[in-house]
Structures are given as structure tokens and as C-alpha cells.
Image 1 (cartoon, rainbow, N blue to C red):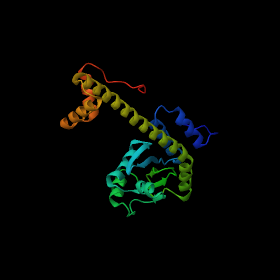
Image 2 (image 1 turned 60 degrees about the vertical axis):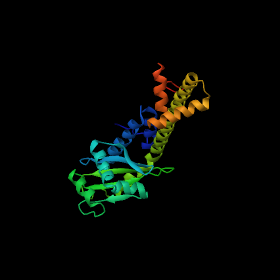
Image 3 (image 1 turned 135 degrees about the horizontal axis):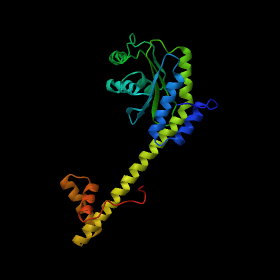
Image 4 (image 1 turned 120 degrees about the horizontal axis):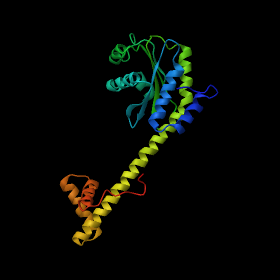
Length: 243
């Protein structure tokens, strides 16, 4: 990955949002660029991004498989520098995991993977979501004040691009939920029509029979409806929003 010298990090990442085929591709580009920007000759740092959403933590991007594993270790122990930074929205620095007493079990396992210092910087995001940039180094005391300042600057420059990507993810989730709801409604309406025709009953009575079948069989209403529709040879109904 190379960034044109005349572009800022923020400008480059905004361009990546438009060019990336998937949200995952963009977020991984963000962390790979972070690793590239913050590494120095002879010392490569690893980067990941922890996102807290609906009280659940997850790594939404990482510069390598090792960076992802270091993030996920914190979720196993339910604590660590990156989780702390995301929760408190304060910078967290562990200069030497061998002497840091805040997360003893996590620190021991992380050192076994060759990581000896960690820096976690929160992103300034709007809304309830919280996120932090996680940076791992193989040397203790690697994060000098100058390197911490550089990492802060990178987080500041990328916060808006990350905010846009999170908004896109929210939009995608909402769109998916709406589409699934519309599919359910279409199947249920068709099934109600079938019951009305078979039993010569009203719409309300037909819907009540469908609900009763759902409760008796302990199956979701949509699944009962879909099974009934498919049982008479009609394929899964499509909505105008399918694509």
C-alpha cells in the first residue's frame, strides 16, 4: 500500500471509502496504513481497531493475523489496554508488559507472542459507539513521547473516515433488517391468503390460525408461512428491494 505524498491520511482514506468494494476492505486498509505510517526502519508495529457497540467488543480491522489475535486476547480476559481506552475514551499506554500490573494474565500471554509494549488511542466518534486504535510493538518502552504524538495525530486524521464507515455499517444493518421484515410480511400475507381460500374464512381468522400453528409447533411465524407457501409450489417471494 502506497499513499501519494501530496495527499493527507484523511484525504487518502476518504478516497479508499469510495474505492473499496466492501466495508471490511476499507477498514483493513485503514489499519494497514496505520502500521505503515507508525512503523520505523527495523521495527514494525501491528495495528488493530476495537469497536464497542451495544456493549459488545470486537475487532473490526487489523493489519495482520497477529494483531487480530492480540485484540481478541483482551476479549477473552474481558480487559486490556485497548478495551480500557475504548471504554474510558482515554489514551492507555503499557510501556513494558513485563512490569505492568493492570492486566497480569493478558500481559503474560501477550508477551508470549513477542509483544512487549502497547499503545491504545480512542477515536473521537459521534454517537454511542466507542473505538480505539491499538498499536503493538515488540520492544518495551518503544512508544516515546514523539511516537505517541504521531499515533495521536493518525487517530485524529482517521476518526472522520472511521465514523463514516461505522455509519455505513449502521445503514447496511438497518437496510438488511428492513428487507428481512418485508420478506416476512410478504410470506405471511401469502400464507394468510392461502388459508382464507382453503377455509373460506376472514383475514383475521386466517391470521389467527397461522399464529396458532406457529405457537403449537414452536416455529417462527415467518417460517410457518414460508413452509405453507412453498408447500403449494410457490417459491420464496421476492420484494421490490431484492437485488
